Amino acid sequence: MSSRERILGRVRRALADVRDEEVPVERAYLREHGQRGVAETVELLAENLADYRAVVHRATDDELPHVIERLLAERGSRQVLVPPSLPPEWMPAAGPARVRDRAASTAHELDGVGSVVTGCAVAIAETGTIVLDGGPDQGRRRITLVPDHHICVVRVPDQVVPSVPQALERLDPARPLTWISGPSATSDIELDRVEGVHGPRTLEVVLVSAGPPDAEVTS
Image (cartoon, rainbow, N blue to C red; front, side):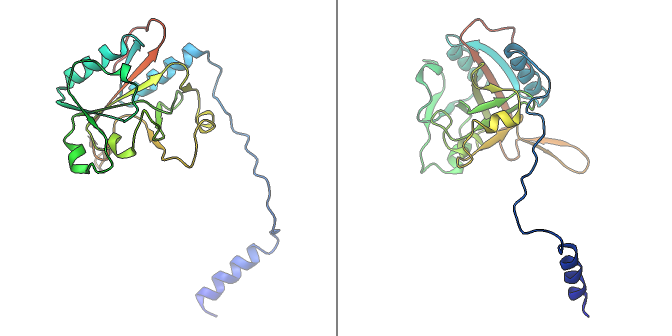
C-alpha cells in the first residue's frame, strides 16, 4: 500500500460518521465589547485611529473646508485628487489644483498627485478602522492607494459604529471594500517599520459633526 492510499484511508475512516447535511454554526460572539454612549464610541474611534498613527482632526460642517485647506497647505501638495461625486462644499475655494479621477488615469499619473480627499462608508470604533466601498464620495480603490497622502472625512456620529459585526451589516459584500487601519505600513524581520509601501504614507481623518467639535486629537 502506498503512502497516498494510507493517507486517504485515514481520511475516509475519520469521515465515516460525519453526516452529509448542513449543521447550523453557532455564532455566540459578542456584537459589541462593553456598553458605550455615542460620544464614548466616537472617542474610542479617535483613540484607536491615533494608536495606528493616523492623524485625527475635529471639525463642524462649516469648518471642514478650512480644515482641508490647512491640511493640504501643510502637506505642500500642488495637486489634490477628488472623487467625481465628492460634496463640493467640503473643498476650499482656494488651494491646490484639483484632479478628477478618470478611468484612463494610470498608476504613474496618480503617483504624481500629492493628496487625495475622500469620504468613507463606515468607521469602526473598536478597531480604529475606516472602510471604503467605492461609493460616490470615495471613488475607485486605486485613488486611495497610490497617492501618498489621504484625507478621509467621517461623518460623526452617523458613520461610526462600535464593532466589526455592526459594520458588516451596513456594507454590501459585492462592493470593492477597502479596510484601512492607519497609514500603510510593513516591517521586516528586524521589526523596522516602513510606511507607504502599499498605500498612503500619511492618513489624516477628519471627524465632522454638525455641532461644535471637541478639542482636536492628533497623534
